[in-house]
Length: 112
Length: 119
Image: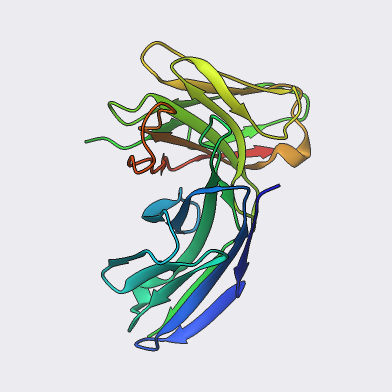
């Protein structure tokens, strides 16, 4: 069964203090790894898709990387508006559907 | 362009009642998936519908059912509600098509969710 583990569960950073969030996964065959941002009471907002080990994608202060066992979401010089829960999900090949298996998320708080 | 829209946004029901949640996908998206998110957890896959056919089902009891209409909108139905069904119900749409290539843009875009409270 596909599994996704995210760490840490919660992270508090000072504004401008860079850090990384981790997503470890096991999947029968990876079709894609997805990062989402979720604000309280809202639906997840799509950030990135990574398809193969070594791939990297960037958007503003965020950079996502992928290895064969884990993905990192690097946040550089964060601002208070980056505070949210960041969710990682995997999609497996070969089952004929687009089921996403999510982790429990990392709750990020940026202190001004 | 409008994103994924869900209705209602909030709902309070009594144990044993039935509920119907609705979802309209992004224009051009034929695939709709439903997820349940309990507080403090990640979303859990319930169903995927593509071209009005069920393409996948998660580990949920038969009290949960869904359907997709010719305009690709979808309904999620839950019968005999339990307290444990209280959650944020999320709908996602995508350009998913199992016949297309590996690097197709398959991102799932989520609606704002329906907050269901069972009392």
